[in-house]
Amino acid sequence: MVVAPYERECRLCGEVFEAEDGDVQTCPDCLDEQRERGL
Figure 1 (cartoon, one colour):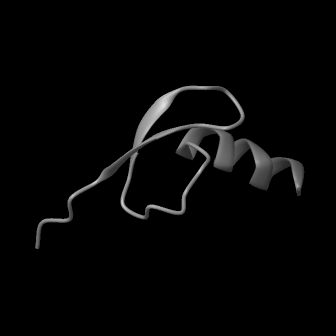
Figure 2: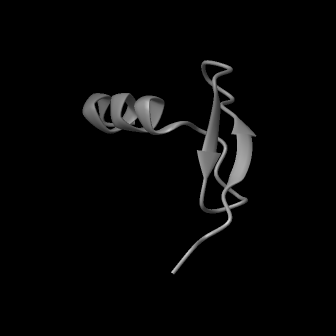
Figure 3: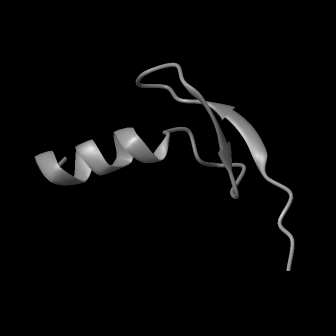
């Protein structure tokens, strides 16, 4: 199954990344950092 990704700009670091969900606003790297910090 092919999912057409959305191109999004991360609101934290400004990096452009491909998101499978149009609502995602944060790149995977920043999401991981937030999880580690417990935010």
